[in-house]
Picture (spheres, helix red, strand yellow):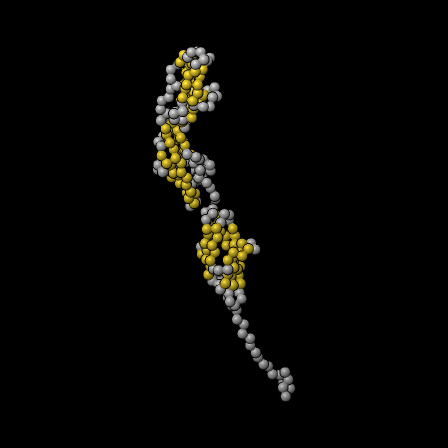
Length: 239
């Protein structure tokens, strides 16, 4: 401005500008990978308040994230300081490949037979999975000839699942309808197979293990099946 003596005077002033630091969120673990259906946990520090969101859905307002996952999900994390500074970042929870271990139902076989237990679906060998059977085998297929409980455990990318199968090998035993018979006219002959161990099937379609055979007689065959053991016999009735 112009002073009394008409010369210029200069003045100074100052303003203090405080720059607050942005939040620096640090998430632990940095990489989160879980098995299908397992729970994923994460925690964050480096700010005063947090918001975890899955899309538009608010999941948590605490530093901790705890979720059960069935698919890979990207969470948005908003971190804020009390001074009003805000940052946003994404955090991915990766879900590993889902798989099943299925040996099928329990098996019954005839003594002397061989059962094959295999894990072909999915192809765990191609997927580089680690397999361990209760008999010590690490192959995808085993052959068994003894009764027992067989367990297989599969480790695929750190995810572990198992299945159990009970195998029973049964003695076929012996079976006979008996000798051929001759009966008088109007008489009948009783064949009772109700005490036979197994499923009885007559070759002529008769469904009851116990039957009377009368005139005119004939040749009658029967099949007894116990698991995979099959025995057959025939009898001739003459009148």
